[in-house]
Image (cartoon, rainbow, N blue to C red; front, side):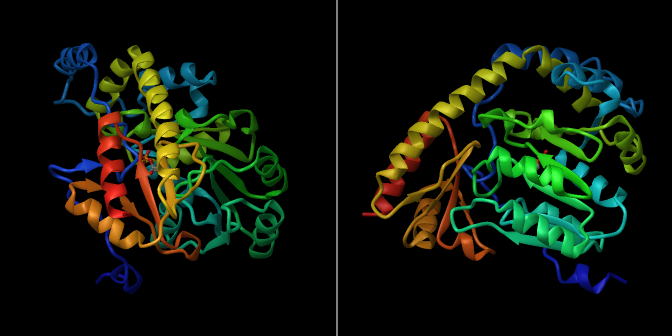
Length: 343
Ligand SMILES: Cc1ncc(COP(=O)(O)O)c(C=O)c1O
């Protein structure tokens, strides 16, 4: 009954991190401030759970539009940005999807589910993106949909502004600039938005990962069409209400993001001091580094109660580990365990 290619896939695996220091999933390590927690409890108590949610999430959409300085018609909300990636791959005309490699895995995974050919364009050894190479592959393969994660996961870097602008100008299909890490990045690309360029964002990295809320900002006509493949009621009532409360306290999350950026700088400095470590520049809330004996280091951290991400699947990621920036205490524990492992 099941398609042979689906049988050959593995389900998305999330390791059990119970009782561990969890530095594997690019989450915000700071819990909700107590005042926000109370406001949230009060508001959620008013939820009409016996009714379906507002199918168009009107209030939240308006809130996001105001926050981003665009019209509500230019905003589409998804159950995480993953869902929007899926909607885009469903809605765009036949033809390959193209993205740099390595990059965020869901572009390829969802393309496979939906039987859309996928073209990975290798990054340079230092994770730079060659715009000519990308555009050449896009035109050769007649790609219709391109994803550029800016900054990129799992490499952590942000490609040159000129590279991104050249791809935008030269690509003939729909370009999606995925800014999942915008809160930690020195620049964003909303100004590049246009008829064939959309910007994808998420609240996940800002501290709302459990709500599952991502959004696409694009031309109103494009949004109107992509909205047709959105499942009804994709954003549940609790997430809609919770997001409104969290928006009322947005500065608390911006302050947490600033702390994460500070900790990122400290962590990068300290990691750079580990003999043999090659630490890649990061514009995100994680740091990718190459270490001799990365596999053993990963295992050592695991038995020390610290979960990070072991990167693989692409030759450019050999011996690479990805560490989400934690709280100061978590980072200190990580550094101590790392130094012990690398002695
Ligand atoms: C580049 C990029 N885009 C999108 C996502 C998915 O985010 P969401 O939690 O909104 O589905 C991630 C998650 O790691 C990511 O790294």
